[in-house]
Length: 90
Image 1 (cartoon, rainbow, N blue to C red):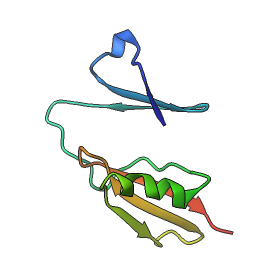
Image 2 (cartoon, helix red, strand yellow; image 1 turned 180 degrees about the horizontal axis):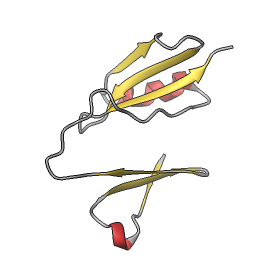
Image 3 (tube, rainbow, N blue to C red; image 1 turned 135 degrees about the horizontal axis):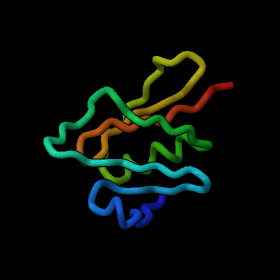
Image 4 (cartoon, helix red, strand yellow; image 1 turned 45 degrees about the horizontal axis):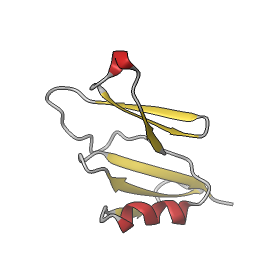
């Protein structure tokens, strides 16, 4: 995903990202505490290539077989939030 400028009315309230038709907004709040369990899940075409990206930047990549019929991994964003990318198997 590519970071994109925030709308002026939302400036300094988070960050916006885009990949094709998909757009996501990540907000911030005072008293921030990283979410260790809640997380966005992104379905991707090439899961192994996607897992290599955070690993190349020193972020942990943990493979998880806990969802039958899916391959998925989790990583941790620099602020401590959990990120997850699932891919259906088969």
